[in-house]
Image (cartoon, rainbow, N blue to C red):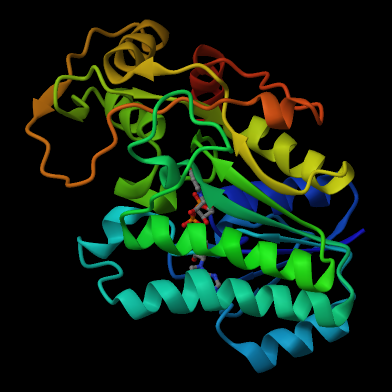
Length: 306
Ligand SMILES: NC(=O)c1ccc[n+]([C@@H]2O[C@H](COP(=O)([O-])OP(=O)(O)OC[C@H]3O[C@@H](n4cnc5c(N)ncnc54)[C@H](O)[C@@H]3O)[C@@H](O)[C@H]2O)c1
């Protein structure tokens, strides 16, 4: 298959592009390197430094590329970027996350792409009761949540109006390889591991009893493959259905490293902070999704990489 991965120099995108290439597909990546790095992309994957906002160049690429499937991972990918100076202009969020997405759907439609699989986020659920399920009412609060939720609404317009096939993946907290470029935006599993391997205390906002549904990258990749190879359409939670407190996470890393490092607890400065997440995964399970890697195994796998 000929496959395009947008945001393919980023964490999930590069892991996916490399894995699809290893499986024998002809893979092309576009990324403007806003956060991702070219070094994340394996040899054998074609790379074009291109923004999803560049409509004429995208059109040209799609018409030449003849892509069968498109995975859309390009985004301003973390809510704090709006308040910490990385992406303070709200127009950048709508340009990249909404218009960029619409550009990809338009080009996919015009060039006969069979299906577009795009990233959404579990953050759209903030404030909802657990476990989060796809039928819950969504009331997005941040630029990140709003722009990723709007994608789902636009995807539905393309489905209704043009009969396009689309699957949106509401990722929970994904961690894994190729995440170093994300720095302080990386998953807490990775950030804690990086600190604790150096003998440093990890920072925790609050008392560490907040919970997260952590998903290992290989399981996130499996969800993408299923979205390509099965009739999955609509939006799907991509998580494990199990959550851990941050204190439990630190304890697991200590156990694996053979250390006894205590976290540094800090007062939480973040507004709209989500205390707990947990994925209801019965919808995606119907298409064969079973998360395989436990948090303990994931930590071991990450450590074996170093
Ligand atoms: N990692 C997670 O736990 C998680 C959780 C929920 C949702 N998501 C979503 O999954 C997607 C991928 O996330 P990630 O963790 O790989 O983040 P990432 O930041 O590593 O990847 C996003 C990539 O998009 C690129 N990009 C940004 N603006 C672009 C533009 N205008 N044109 C082309 N490329 C552009 C960046 O350079 C980066 O390489 C994002 O939409 C994110 O919101 C991720």
